[in-house]
Each structure stands twice: as structure tokens, then as C-alpha cells.
Length: 128
Image (cartoon, rainbow, N blue to C red; front, side, top):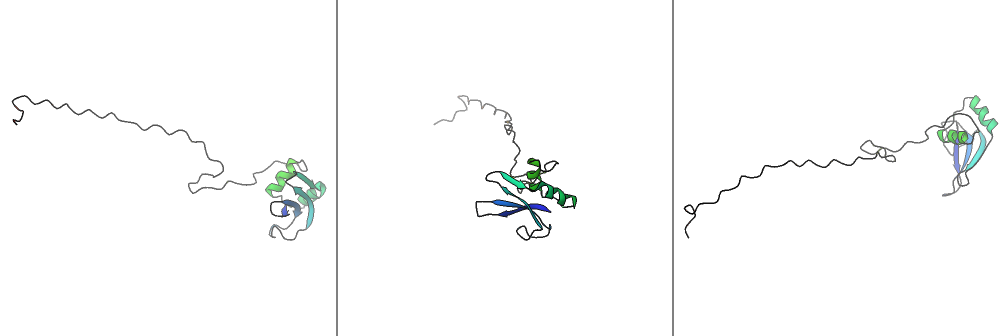
């Protein structure tokens, strides 16, 4: 597998482009150093002929390495999705929330007015 191997200090990431077995640790031994990538300066140096050589032998590219090499036109192909947004408990992705439509106003049903109470006649009025 051709992938990036992180080196550098905390906060100062720097990557090697290496060929390694897909089962080895990301920071473990590698078969060949193919280049380097500095994300702070956005500079990538790679041996395009060696990358193509390893790909002809059956080496697969990691999604990030593929996108970097395709973006810099060192190899031909299409970019692939390198990461997926984490899902929340409700099943919606965290990083790409759907725009919500405004909630419809609750319907207020017209309640019938109570019947008017007739006023008592003078005969029905209590005597004090």
C-alpha cells in the first residue's frame, strides 16, 4: 500500500509518502520512500516513476495519498472520498446537517363561544 506516514513534531505535521504492507503500523517500517508532503507550505515532492512502478506491481493508494497525487497530476485518475462525517445518535451526519425548513405554525382550532347567560328577571332576584 502507498500511504502517508506522519513525522514531525506536535503542531508541525510533515509526511512521508511510503510503500508499506497494509498490515504494518502506520509509523512502522516501510519498503521504499517515495516522497514527502509538507501541508504547511502545501509542497509535495514525489518520485512519479516509482509510484507508477509500485502501482503496476499491485500496490494500492490510500484515499488521501491518491487525492494528493491526482491533484498534483503525478498520476491520472479521479479523486475519492477520503473521510466520512461521524454520525450522531439520530443517524444524521455531524459535519453536514441538512437545512431545516421552518416548523409550521400550530393550528389553533376555533372553540365555540359559551352561550350567554340570561340576566335574571326582577322576580327571580334574591331579596336582601
